[in-house]
Image (cartoon, rainbow, N blue to C red; front, side, top):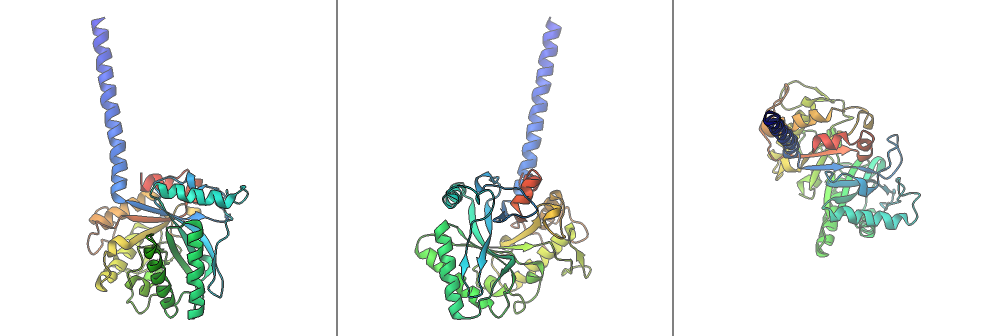
Length: 338
């Protein structure tokens, strides 16, 4: 009996040690991911696309702390409008009231919900003060109607270096307006890689907005880009690789720093597809994103491209999109944020 009891106690002790070790290992992994990425932005589909995964706002994992709602509509006269049509709200009785309530529920969890303008089909066509007045007034109305925390600009069409000054004026006025009301007006942009390619500030269509310090985060789409050069190394890095992520982030941040952009590494957000189906090209496994972030932050876990310097404050990631991530049982958010 004594021998059996001793064995029992030894087994129990070993199980306790093993459980403690395993729990610690899991916690360590989670903490490591959290240390690499402290903020994750994910777009929510206000439409039906091949992801075919309806997600209520209140079902979004809380590791997504910024949720741009994609998309509002843009008219040629500058008018911004928003029609709620994304599943599962479209067929819900009192859908708008429910949607507003769900926005507030996320905000109560410290999650920012933004209205995103643009996308594949939306074009920025503001080319006069009259159009800009319409843009400002109607965007303000949409934000106040639904209670959004701010706006995301994802202009893949229409925005040029020439008409970007109207966007600067509009954004500044909106920031001032909401500040006067004691409210936040958070601004993100989602430029394609070429639009923040490490050029000088007379060439990029988002440059004036960034220079004016009106953008809180620049969520660069590191996909659907093809091959892009970096300031160090070969002339071309192929999308869908760790080197591509690191080279583009390093190159852009270095130019921003040269031109006096404050907190450049904190503003930069690496945008990647949630699944291989979510974009035409540029997908990498989420684990590779973690390694790329470690490379950028510490100059460790790099492949051939080593950043010019370490960026310990570069800890933000964006993904297109939450619905695609849901289709894969949230593999992206579980891996990147733990």
